[in-house]
View 1 (spheres, rainbow, N blue to C red):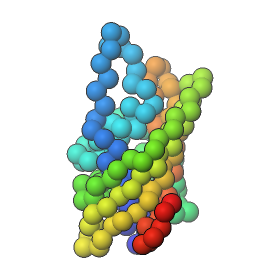
View 2: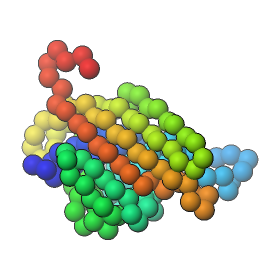
View 3: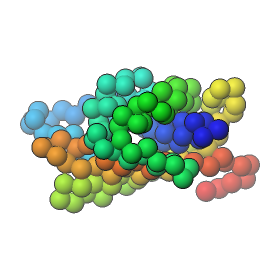
View 4: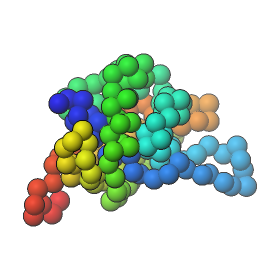
Length: 159
């Protein structure tokens, strides 16, 4: 059940955030903005690209969900990354809103989304809230914290 909840929150919020970011500018060495990193994370989940997922996170990333925490990239990779990829591939996620707060090498990206579909034979219709904290190190943004929360949407539920 915990893996199912982790997968729902992880992939649903991230899974359909959008395709991999394409950051074209007059300055090709300009790092992707924090929201672009979040989009790239979602795209990597959708495609099952574990190398890309790993490259977007700091080695000491902390991922919190349902009262549990994974305290490193290695721990996440060995525990829930596979289930999150499986979930992301199985459902459709629509981003409802996103807010980015950025200051002096730190950024917080808050995303609200809805995931629908079927995962492991069960219908999914969930509201998701994702918060990612990113830190700029050596010019690159890395995800240092993820918090996923999800709740089943009931009939007549407006928020």
